[in-house]
Length: 595
Image (cartoon, rainbow, N blue to C red; front, side, top):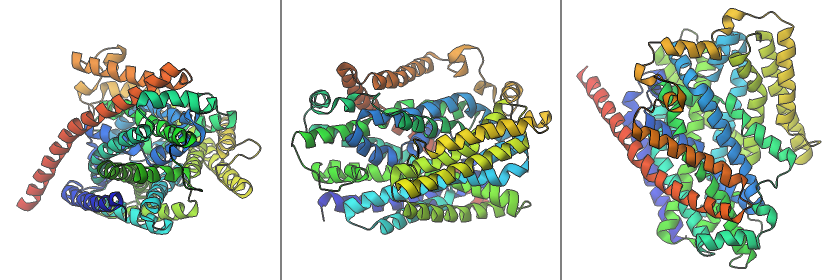
């Protein structure tokens, strides 16, 4: 067995044991269902930021994007650009109001928000649609680990899926969201280091970063450096499933509820926008590997899948220390994302199915137990989805298509359209989700993939095109309830936040303007947010203009520099929050002993 592989196995075993131990340590904090599901709504700024990054960058963002860069070049990066765009719009528009809404109503899921507006008739359909994504994406992370294990260790797909599911189950079942937050902090640091090191190795095989970047333009087809070399159908699929979807994403709703205040909820996630460059480096790495193959530096095994390129290249071209860090970082990337989506699925099953349907009078102790049972169920569904469709990106696209088709019209109307009705919401949720699923199954039968295009249309095109008219037509044909509309009104919630005692005064904007909204009241914070804004906007400028060699060179260097600096920032600041949480855990343990 390769030395890198052997040492990686040992390191991974040690880390898994450590994660389980951390879960046991923080179990004393998870004394209520709110603690288990949402970390008591107490996630501090930098821990929220780091853990969010750990969940945001997943298996598809590493293994899948390297393969996309290798096969199609920079134009495939529209996928990651739409993800970050949709996420930012959601954070700015909704995260603060949702955090307040959660504190006001004890909301846990996106269905709680929907039902506050349209009534409990929407509970089951919205829960089923919203569960689709976290369940499938949990399976997607199991599959990503399995693919890596197959390349690195030579194990079967089934074995890899089962092992990865057991790992995530063991450390989450103790403290739930607390376990997820703590481990995602550490995992995000390892994954960031792994992504940067992999890119450095991929470039070094050819030469220095400048030489490799020049080779992108001299060696590869021109379409590979043209960000706009993408067909219309693929562009619109990405725009809808990887951009617009995040405005109605059950996972983003969960993150909005977790923050210790509305300000932390939004600013914590915005603070890691520089992390978007961790999604750039895998594409550039894939292109660098293609340069190496094209100029004859090395050859690839016949039939090697793009999803397997990351692990294969690491084993064959890294020294022992770097290779271990890269492979460990890859596994941590996938595990952190998997645990985050698993917990999202747990919140939906526990809150929407058990607490609101099966046992409406459940005690908090019963709900806490049900949360752990729900985790087992989500993991089981994830295993089934991973083995049902063992390809990464189509699995992702299927989940996004069903979710967007069933939830977008319903949630946006709840926020902004007081004339919308329960009947309209039912029609849009059930009709949109069902049509998207049926179209995906038809595409699977005719093209071999549920993410395939039939007559140039993806499932999301058809689902959204059905759900929005259904919401409008049925709502206009039925009687509205304007009083219920106030519960989720964007305007009403915004006004309530200004006067609410649920929010500390320091967490409310004290003045107008961008800095006022950010609550940036010191020079240090103002400078911080200016830097973040420049880095974030630079992502768009450098991406859209990548066909220009100068901008392409800038993109390469900015990605390396920003990525490197963020590792230290997240390690130090997130670590401080971990220490404070550990102290709180110890105090909680001492109180239990005194009883």
